[in-house]
Image: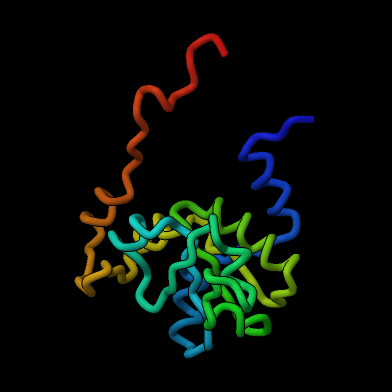
Length: 157
């Protein structure tokens, strides 16, 4: 059976725990040691991200989790037993990433349900690559969907 993207996400949801933005905020406020792992593409990350996050794009995640690769992210490779919150734009890529990380032996990985969009909706702090604070209105503009006409499913399919 052929699976679609959402089918893959739903399959992963059976194995991955999710937290909501207010859960993350509570854990951060409690001073819990968390590794915030943003798996969006570098251009997405540079526009806005949750302060304290590191960026490892989904496309190089597996190599970044392991030692001895050009893509190795030392902070991540050394964190198999650390509390990790995986973040993306909407919470789908993060579920897929968390599922893979669990298969790779990371023991405490959760996905941020609703991603940075939900974090912004909850009106939590965001910043850009230059360290400037991003307010909720700016964030909404930066996170707005930008599907082109050719990316939409043709009628009749």
